Image: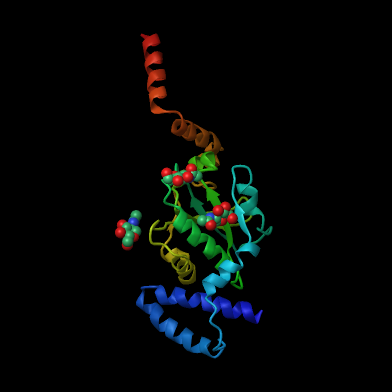
Length: 237
Ligand SMILES: *[C@@H]1O[C@H](CO)[C@@H](O)[C@H](O)[C@H]1NC(C)=O
Ligand SMILES: *[C@@H]1O[C@H](CO)[C@@H](O)[C@H](O)[C@H]1NC(C)=O
Ligand SMILES: *[C@@H]1O[C@H](CO)[C@@H](O)[C@H](O)[C@H]1NC(C)=O
């Protein structure tokens, strides 16, 4: 227990240190002073790499078209009024992210490992649009984004906070810092019609059909569509 509290504090340090906002500096100094009495001087463990070493034991859910709903609701207790925080990283491959998502994906995976060491960790999930094109189209979700779901028991509306991370520069420290300072500072509340729970499409049970339709237009080559359209219009003349 003591270990995990100390490492949580260690994890918070670079996070606070890298935040640009000046008000954090004072807080950080104060924090650092307090922490020094707890941190054994011989300890040189790099918290992020230690966390990475623990990645194997960390629980990161892989979301699919079939399991996303039950996965997100899995740890929500009936009658609970405190949301279960769920951090989902949306990634892609050569087709859906032009091969640029790997670095930030790696950063998120390390972050998930680091979160697992916190006393009250958020849940973490992984959505790969290369493998789940229909789900990604149904949510109309861009790759390289983190979605924070605030899960409450059904049928309560679900708030989702979204942030797109820089694909080339983002490190796990950046993501951990966003968590430490409170994600609502930099994430945006999802208010679009494609919101997987509250959006118009979802409320009318149309997310899935829309996902299939959009996916269809993505996979069918445009020349085939043009050809079909010209046949259709010709036969109508
Ligand atoms: C992605 O593209 C790169 C470069 O074109 C290639 O080396 C790699 O094998 C591709 N990966 C997949 C999963 O297709
Ligand atoms: C991140 O974790 C996911 C889920 O465990 C895994 O499928 C993926 O290969 C990992 N990505 C990287 C870049 O390590
Ligand atoms: C990512 O960060 C780099 C370096 O700061 C910057 O040049 C680039 O424009 C950023 N990309 C996006 C999409 O913001």
